[in-house]
Length: 183
Length: 143
Image 1: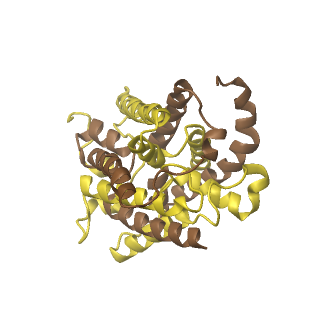
Image 2 (image 1 turned 90 degrees about the horizontal axis):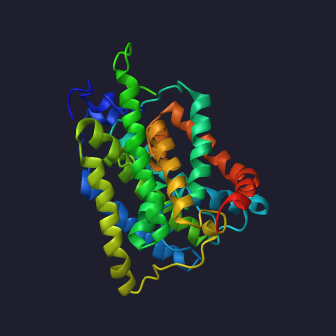
């Protein structure tokens, strides 16, 4: 879709990602990246199963955060964690991504522009994810697993992503706006 | 101990892969609508397709992939209507934030200041949900 004034990846909302401007040595694109991550998630689901893991649990950013906090002593409020032992996936994610960014020279510290808004969006997203039975990653994994409720949830995710994108384009094109789809 | 080891390793690998590929579960829709770029949408399709095949294949190889009881279900959507609305909320919030929860971890690790605040909110959201949101919401939801 041309004609909306957005021609480069870096013009996209909210994601001023320096890696998009480079062509680094190793960058699995599209389907390959998804396939690798999907197989890894199923493998993790199987490996964690003996520790009590629920179905399609291999990678979930929301559920694993909850179970990390529950494992660290918030059990009384959050209930028992889904698996025995500490769930360190999210810390691994941060470390792995930081390592990749460093190795490929894509680490760039940018100060927060809207801390309060970000904090609020994060908290709301967690609450919505727990209600929707998982973050976007686990919902996709649940869809592959064959969970009908997750198919509804993931359908909602995709529809809302489309709707909000449309809304942001509309907002950027309103009379008097400079075509900046910033948020 | 084993759980910690497995999850840390999986997280490291997934984080590395996610940083290299820029994978995000909502950006596929956004990029396709805005600039007709299908790369990230293809990544999500690849994820679901590969997992769809990997469950039975790894299962047949003897890995117990089918899982046990799920505590997430005890405090989450129980009907399609609630599921689709909650999913829409996740998708809308993530799109307005510029990335799904996985992507926010990657952006934070790359040095994105806003994403660190987003993650702080994300973690604070856990007790908020279990102490306040779910107890208020549960009596109002259909079962």
